[in-house]
Structures are given as structure tokens and as C-alpha cells.
Image 1 (cartoon, rainbow over the protein chains, first blue to last red):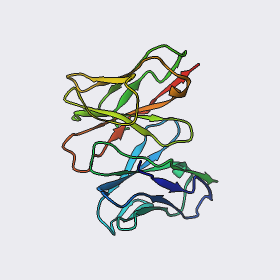
Image 2: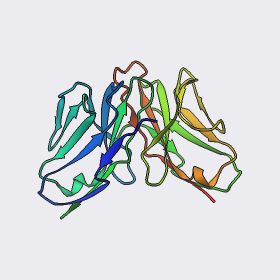
Image 3: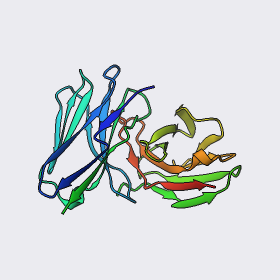
Image 4: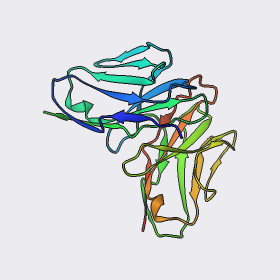
Length: 111
Length: 114
């Protein structure tokens, strides 16, 4: 059983503040890591696909880093806005057909 | 939006009944995967369909079955429903040849089993 952990489980952040959270996964057989943003009552939205150790991806105020040797990824949000409120899911892929999801970090931005 | 649609949005069934959930994949995609998200958990992989055949299965019993049609749309069937089958069911479409298995999700079907 592949254990993917995300921390914290939930987070409340003041609007304008920056924040980050973690995804930990088994480093053996790692192939790629997917980050998704999931707003209530909507489809999970793909944010990043990361593959190389040291990879860093950026999309607007959101960025992510990857360490495949130690098996973790950080997601950063700079200057949080109310529209950033969502659950953020990470899902490593180990070279097969499935994504293995963590339980997610539920982010709430306080206006 | 991803272009992946699911129906119905919500469904209520009773124990022992059977249910069929439907998914239309994004244009240009040929692969559909199904996931179950129970309360407090991340989505769990059920199975994947490619070329109308099952291409990988997670830890789910045989009463979970699926179909893929020539237009790449898919159905998830669950027989003999149990209370623990209450969950959000997500489908995801992808291109089988995609290098990193990028999957695009629909909004899900919420199944409640009473």
C-alpha cells in the first residue's frame, strides 16, 4: 500500500498572507507528481505535473517544488486571495495507470 | 472546465440495489479512469478503461464493474450496494499515450446508499 500524506489537513489563512503545505510520498518507483485544486461542487483542476528532482513550477501566485530523492513536494501560495479557498490534492504516479491521492489540504482564506 | 461530464449529479439508493453511473470523456481522450472518494479520504482508484477493456484495477470487489463504449464514454456499475459504497464517484479522462498520465476530472456523482 502506497502511503501519500498531505499536511496540514486544513489551514485558515488571512487574505494577503502567503502559505505553503506539504505532500509526502514513497520515493521508490516515483514517476510523476500531480497537484490538483478542487473547489466545492466543481471538478478537480489540474495545477502542475512535476517529474524531475528539483523541479519548480509556477502558475500565477501558486508555485510548487519537488524533491524525488526524499519524496516530498511543497505547494506555495503567495498573497492568498479568497478564490484560493479550495482543497489541494497531490497525486503521485508510480509508472502505472493510476494516480494515488493524498487526503488533501483544505485551505480557507479569511477576508 | 475540463469537458468531462458525469451523470447523474446525485443519486440515492438502498442497500442491495444496483447503480449505473455515466461519464463522457473530454474530446480527443481515449481513456477513462474511475475513482471513489469516501468521506475524509482522498480519491481511490477503482479501475481504468482503454480500448473498451479494463486496463488496471484498484482494490475493489468484482461487484464494481465498468464499460467503455466506442465513443470513449464509460459507465461504472455497482451491484449489491452496501452502506460503505456511499461516496463521491469521480471519472477522469486522459490520453493513453500521455507521458505522465495527466488525467482530467469530471465533477463527480454523489451516491448515497440507505
